[in-house]
Length: 160
Image 1 (tube, helix red, strand yellow):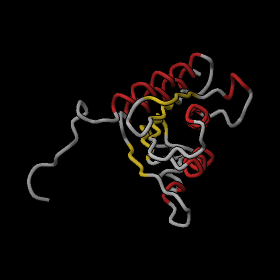
Image 2: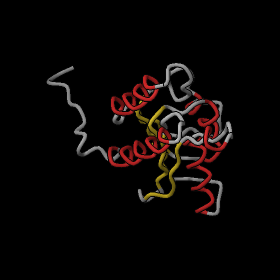
Image 3: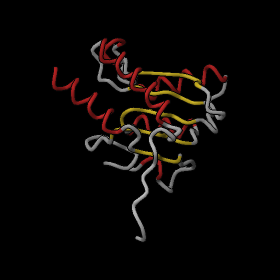
């Protein structure tokens, strides 16, 4: 490699703002006793379409993950199940269920903060979203505010 390493400027990163909104959503989950994971779904033009945070404890629904809820709400708002051109920003790497929902809903891009070495399906444990055998493969951007996302989760579990 020639010259100094160039790192992205977080102030110019287009995903920092949406990730901060996802972190706020995650905090809402923590306040209700759920694992602090938050997600925001952006429309193709970058505007906020829907939000979600984990609600498994609050609802007793095992599928009430932040990503699934944001996807459901976004599809309802659009009146269509295809979320072509949309971006999901989430604080924790999606699990297999959520990765499947991303593929099925045709989300264009998934941006996540913290990797999930135990259940991640966007590159850590599995790479479902980029599996060439599937008919749709969203772009994956990882590590956005990763330290903050990890710290939020670590703090939650430490306090429990």
